[in-house]
Length: 143
Image (cartoon, rainbow, N blue to C red; front, side, top):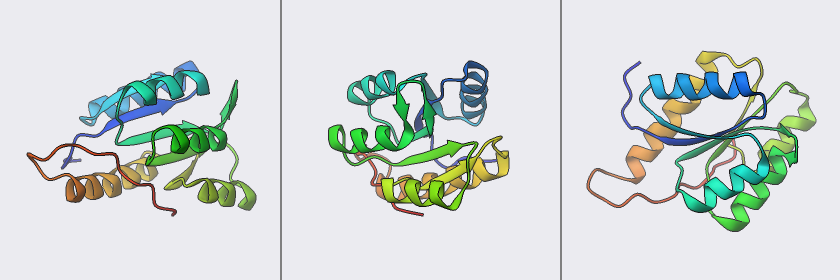
């Protein structure tokens, strides 16, 4: 798949194999991927860096993705993020939407679902930050 824009992405996942697989896939697709295994690590990374996208698991050892999103928006607003979880009940999807996630992807992740989200974000990022202009954080839009 041809990429229009390289995204800087923070992947937050406590399952090491999944975390490394996501990082490898995103980098093979031409993106820059940083990783965090906990909410604490993710908050530190987001404070020190600017990301085009945060992809986070909902179930984290020191909190959940919804709380992470709330704290990210307080500390480094605005932020664009995608939730991923093994749970896809209506209540989970609504909670993700209310938290400001762009999408809620179900695990195991389907590459086609991830690619669709990445394409949408690449298009928005390209439109919002034309070449030669300074990079700015992107606002999350509910799905």
